[in-house]
Image (tube, rainbow, N blue to C red; front, side):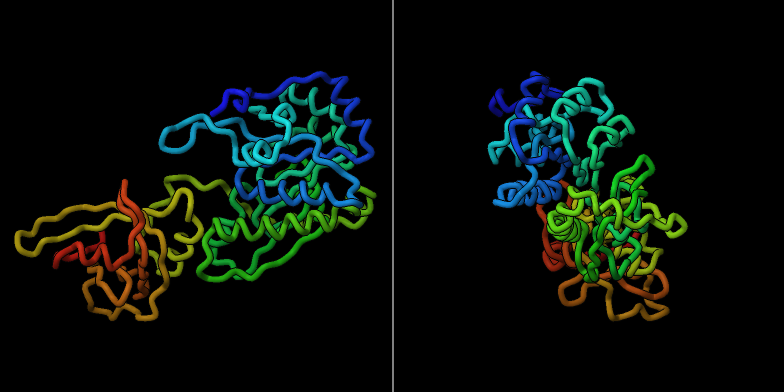
Length: 358
């Protein structure tokens, strides 16, 4: 990577110059906070809206997670939001990457910009009171759930894991309590029973970015504060961060539970399973671990009395017996270090050997 694009933990710049720059523009300065690729969608929408002839705001600065080692080479890379901003020509000295949003040096630079409003979208850092007190119009978060449902770090994943038939995106004023501020607006979305977390996340943040731009005039003129509705804390549910340890599939659960988990954990950390490949000729067992990529719930229930550990092949799927005589069909899988391939290729590679659950 070009050394001129390498980030320090945060960029210092002349506060007086920054203040002068902000006052020289008639547009109100807005600071955006976000980190993953889905947040870049929101930033792109803000960039486009700020260029409209009647726009009252400009993106004055971007705050994102510090560079991290990514990819096979483990090179130090900027966050997807930072990379997107650089690719659009956004000034690198106005991209801040503090370890924590409460760092004094970072907050000093933020105050110098005199932002009217801050917008967050999957930023991934806790915002302390001394941050929230800086923008006079507050901080607004694009949250991919229908608050107060699924407050927390993994709202989309937990909603899919629960088999939710409906979800949505909320615009909410940020307060110190987790995702508990007044809701400005929301949009609902029916959930397809095959959609996976990365696709649903992208869809919700796309809808959220449009909702944000629609509501920005009311946020800037203050009327959003008046119409924002307090959340009913008694109806709140939590969406805690996903852990790697949760990725294992246990086939003593019902097929629908496992199917929902595969959809929810797609992307990261994925879902894993172990099976035994059995050679009937010599009884040799070979244990194989793989990632489960795509599944569906079988319409053919397991008949009581069948071998409960036998994994069979039907049409285009490996059929795993599950609890309550249900069955999960695995359509795509991935062996360690290999590319994703379909169930037919895996089954043909067995060359007559049996497949059993562990």
